[in-house]
Structures are given as structure tokens and as C-alpha cells.
Amino acid sequence: MERQPQTPRLLDQVRSVLRLHHYSIHTERSYLDWIKRYVHFHQMRSREDLADGERKIEVFLTDLAVRGQVAASTQNQAMNALVFLYRKVLKKPLDEMIDAVRAERKVNVPVVLTREEVSRVIVVMEGVPQLIVKLLYGSGLRILEAVRLRVKDVDFGMKQVTVRSGKGARTDSRLCPPP
Image (cartoon, rainbow, N blue to C red; front, side):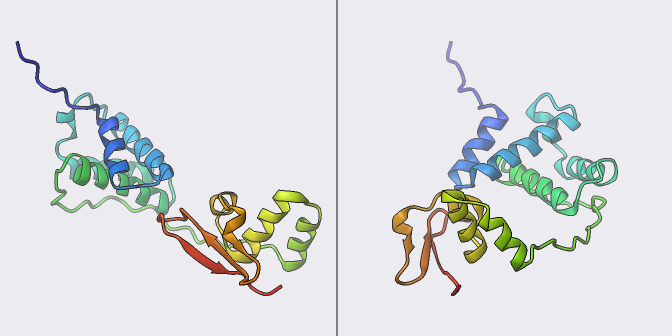
């Protein structure tokens, strides 16, 4: 008796496609979490339960906005994860409109330290943490970009920092502003 090749588990298949498309590990974790929540929300037990995706996505996203009271960006992230699942993993087009209740955009006024406050924080630090904070403040690096820096990435003569594997997996050079 010849056995049919087994279809991989849904989350394993999602993980494989994400890695094939070079998504970051953070996006992978986020998308997998949203897909798990979606499957759990609709109490899905098999791949057949994923049918009628537009309607199910709409119900899930509406619930996030109304009952979950999530931020608009959170709802967008969930939407992106589910669209990725249907289009890239399941190869099922989402042809109908997904008209979910939209989460309200919250207006957040950014809280920014003054130069004096930044100076007071930096003075009490020392060593590598102080260097990283100075790089973050002076160049606009992201935390992971600063932590991944190597000595050869800093060119003091040109006042330039080379960022490898930054957001979007691009290599970028940033000029440091004068003190």
C-alpha cells in the first residue's frame, strides 16, 4: 500500500513560507501568533475550516476592534498576517471585500526627553551600555542595530556607522551628526 505524502502542519507550512520570503524572526513570531489566535477564535479543526476566508477574517478583525479594543496598528498587523496566510501559504485569493469594523486610531503625543534629561541619563551610565545609548541617541539606530554593531562598522574618520542586517535586511550607512 503506497502512502500519500503528508501535508505539513499549518503553522509549520506558514513558518517555511515566511522563511522562504526572508521575513524577520519578529514578523514570523507575530504572524504565527495571529494565525493561532484566528484559528482558536473560529475553533477550526482542519484546513477545510479555513474556507470562506473573507467572512471569517472580517468577523475576527471586528471582534478585535470591538471586544478586544485593540489599536488600529494591532488590527492592521492581524490583517496582514491573515492575508499572508491565505494568499501566500494557502494560495487562496481573497477576492471579496473585507469590511471589518476598524479600530479607532489613538492620537499619541510622543514623549521625548529634553537634551538636558538625555545628558543626565548618559552621565550615570558607563561602558558598553553608555556607548550604545549614545549611538541610539546620536544616529537614530534601532536597539538591535546598535547591539549587532562590530568595531569595524564604526568609522571615526568619516564619522560614519555601517548598519548590517537592519530593518528590511538592507545594509545602510549613517552619518553621525556633529556633537
